[in-house]
Image (tube, rainbow, N blue to C red):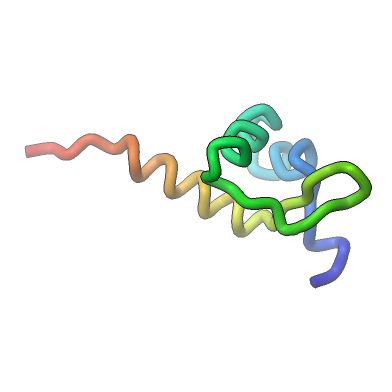
Length: 65
């Protein structure tokens, strides 16, 4: 995995269009796992962030009967 493919929470949030606080919250709650560290910052793969977003939306979807 190369360094260019990993993003800090702030960079990933900007790419995905959400708040960095959301990424930090998902990490703290175990919905998203960092791919590694860059200095003292967690770094993430965008694919993992998108997957966590899809998973969170799916859990909140109501079943229509």
